[in-house]
Length: 252
Image (tube, rainbow, N blue to C red; front, side, top):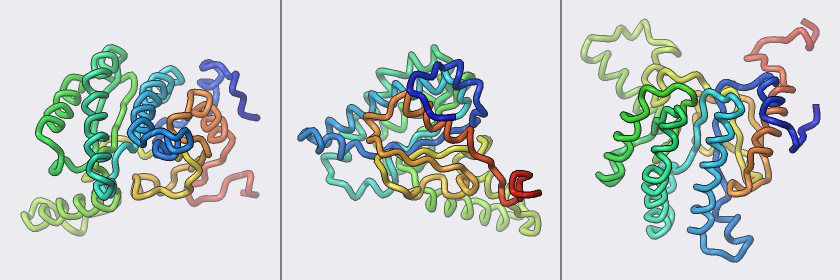
């Protein structure tokens, strides 16, 4: 089936939909540079794309959506850009939280919170508390997130439980580690999409994405539209997931 930008939401739902879609939202700065605009305007346009894609994902029947918005490595960027990104998170929560809640979206923010401003932490906690009972769409925002840091923190918590005598090291398995990750209780992503033409995970869900299907698109994040999402879903639908096994199509 060839991706068709005129596909309706109903036609998308009839595909073999991924349960969990994760997106590395990349290319805001290059989108702005291409238009001779300040980088901050690219980030602001990226927030508008978030609004559109969250709404579209819910309409298409996606149950879990994870967006990589600020990595733990992004602190290396110029302070003014970091401050602008923090301001955009505040803006997004203040402006869109009521609509997300009304539409049944369950909001969860993953990543380290120690270095975040007190008001941002409070806003995150309020958003999670307000939407905790919603179940139409589970939206995870990876903010100040890094996959290696997440695994390190999980291992540290496991080690503490072993030291305290509450966990037998002989019983530790993959499920134990998964239960100590930020994403505990959430199914691993079936599909990871990265915008802007880059082809790497950049420390995003590196444990959870072990068997995820990957789709890379040249579109910068501000240009990523519902049609772009539909095309990625069609590509996913046409793939055969083996999880290390052999499928009948391979000869049994």
